[in-house]
Amino acid sequence: MSILFELRYPTRWYTKLFTAVLALAFFAVLSTAAIASFLLFRIVKPQRSSSEINMQSFPGRPDAVNFEVEGQGSREGWFFPGFRVAPTIVLCHGYESSRGELLTLVSALQDHQYNVFVFDFAAHGGNAGVTTFGYREADEVRAAIDALAKRDDVDPARFGLWGYNLGAYAALREAQSDGRVRAIVADSVYDVPEQMVKIGVERSGVGGFPLMIRSAETGFNWLNYRYRTVPPLSRSFKAQRGVPILFIEATDDPELGAITRQMFQTAPEPREEAVIAHGNFVGLLDDDKRAYENRVVSFFLLHLPATGRVTR
Image (cartoon, rainbow, N blue to C red; front, side):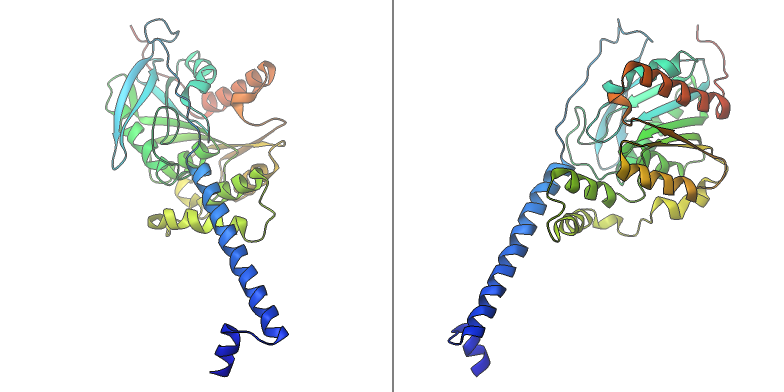
């Protein structure tokens, strides 16, 4: 009783010091949790920018395709036709990006007679919600492929996937359980979604504060508790044995570059790696963008030839 009384009503100098330190520690933990929660909210709910095109006048004769994602509502994508009954390349945009920023890559693939499809993930483009950095986004990729496979102008058993960070994770996760995916380009991919949360906190400038990153990761895992048993991508690569994967590593993005290199080293054959100076396709200069497009197109031409009947 005397100890509890002394802690509650300190009279000695050392108990006063102890209670002061305890109060400061409690305040620090509380402040860290509050800041981490605010950062996490900003990270999983990025600013959105919607892209629109005139379907009648835009080159490539795109069609609007609507599809449903179980538990998430409807999505709209743009389908750009190539050869009739040719493979379809689904482009999965990156974090804080949108389908409208991939149109030059769409054109490069369509010029080689691929069918190409682009859409916006949750919390991006015109879609509300929050990002799960690939957990639910893999379901969106699956729903898009399911909808496209019902068309009579595509090959329902041959799809290719391209993705950048968020899109790359979703593409690889989806391909592990979908035999229709025959080739994948994974640009700046990560192994587990928490890694993107860590990068987001570090880039905010407060990642050096004690427990800040861990608090944000804990909050993210709590929000996505239903996915707690999902293993890292690298542990499930055996399911993709035989599917060619091109890993693209950018030297100006050291965090994701290092993870991508580790993923490449873990992945089974057939695999390829391309190291480029500048990452993020959307922000590349014209010459770098053309070189990037040529690398991606060459990979798909080799591993997923665009054969079919010419659309009349």
